[in-house]
Image 1 (spheres, rainbow, N blue to C red):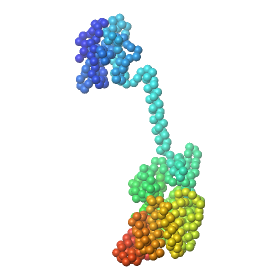
Image 2 (image 1 turned 60 degrees about the vertical axis):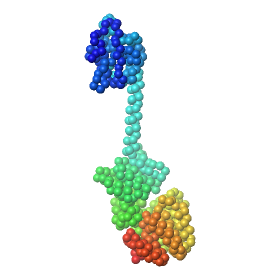
Image 3 (image 1 turned 45 degrees about the vertical axis):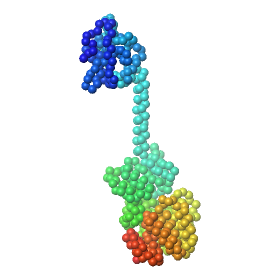
Length: 464
């Protein structure tokens, strides 16, 4: 109900009625156009005047009272008030006004007026422009292929590739990146599972990578580069798991060979050749392994040549040709190539040289080389440490120190079983050491583990 039961006379002040706290909605009174507030389901009239809250009365005839130039604010709503309180304006002033003043609502006060409105508009336009630019930057970065190199990255779109180089298009120009500088390539619109598998392979988590790639839906992928990357990392994960003894070597080798046959121009070609050579060497097919290692050795970069030389030395060592193998290993050790890959090949060549010295009867020299590799090896490099402790165990065994040989070989068995070939050879030598130490039960257990896990290797066949 309207707080004024009758229309006030001219010059008579209105009775002040203070508003309740938390006013959010103001409605005009149906009789005198006073503002009311809605609190829940109850509407209370809001009188404009009195201490603490001074406002104006907008009667049906028009606006009354004198107004200040800079009106105060009540919350976020501007208030206009008269110095002596709201009064009914004289009739002469009322008659000069035409029309009825529309009561203000919360929508009118939501946006500033005048200069404030202009500043508000400029700020909002600037914010919108910044958001648009940020979204465009994100979309631009997302649509580019990223070639991660040893010393940075190259962004663009991969337009061509070969076993030796990758061509990236950048704003009308092209840039060629050699394969020996590439660590990985992330393609535009590639599935997230491929990215996860690539990161897992880099961290030697091959089982995780294999499971991730099994769930990739290849029917929805159009770019052949992405499909080839999926095929390569799936074959690589299976090959590494097979070399550890978790999968069949022959099946893994067939998948990697199929990748080489179907995609001869892929930039993973040299890596795939090296993996196929490792699989064939693990099966004892040294002639076939040598063919693939020779392909790797034809690359124009020294680190690839060193990798091929070290692998060829391993093949000759397995064929009981230590003098010829020693030449390959010494060639790797004398090379002046720099980088992490070259350093890794030197460590492998050092262990290969130690194995050659074992076959030549120089046990103490071999033991020194193996201990030097262990001292400088990365604690997380299980492959290298497994091979080094294997050399230590064999050297101690040939020198007649059976207890020391047993401890070294047991370390390979318990701590570094990731290397399939080294683990199989360690079990074969443990059978001999346990037999020499009169520990028939331990020898029987080692022979059973060798036959169950590595029955298709030359070490299991020799133990029989």
